Amino acid sequence: MSEVLSGKIREKTGKVATKEVRRNGEIPAVLYGLKDNLSFSVFPGNLKDILKAKGQNALIDLSLEGDKQRKVILKEFQSHPLKELWVHVDFLEVDVSKTVKVNVDVHLIGKSAGEKMGGLVNQVLKFIHVECLPADIPQFVDLDVTNVELDQVLHVSDLSLPDKIKILNLPNEAVVSVHLEKVKEEKVEEEIAEGETEATADAATKEVSDKKDDSTKKES
Image 1 (spheres, one colour):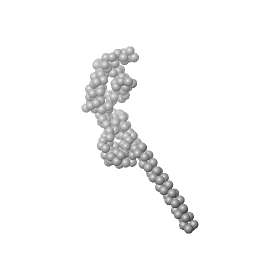
Image 2 (spheres, helix red, strand yellow):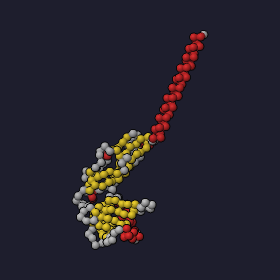
Image 3 (spheres, one colour):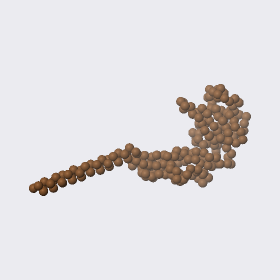
Image 4 (cartoon, one colour):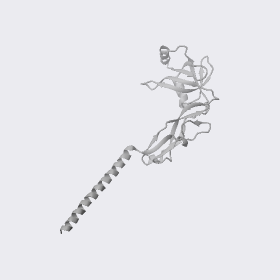
């Protein structure tokens, strides 16, 4: 089910017009993808409510004054360099009967067996690239890591998605791994090295001592 986002077509463009849009509490936006391009504005609160409820790849019914309703998805956004707000958004108009290519976030579920043993979970792939119909775009992909042991790696081939969604990443691409932390590994290696050094030193000391004993016995 699509979510409805209302907006106003912008007759004027450029820096001055864009600043005025932002002063009115709206975000400048553009639409492209099918037959035409449009410049318009939307209220950030309405857009963020939709994305919070349905995810960043939500299929949206864009309703603009004086224009037909269009099916769109959020394509890109620009953030303010200093404040936590968006300053511009791009929307892609889609044909619901044709597939689109989008990025979908990968969410890790559970605490891995390796992590419980002191391992560090490294999520190599934060999102995957998929192709499907606009209405079938998943909000995110779950990956259960509960049974992942130390030094084990899960790959794209371990992800489970419906057949109607095609994953475009290579199957052998790593998604998550669990290894001992670097510091811990180095500490273990140092301890092993120190142990070997001490053992070598003890052996050398013993050898010298044995030679002295043999020398003393011969003199006697």
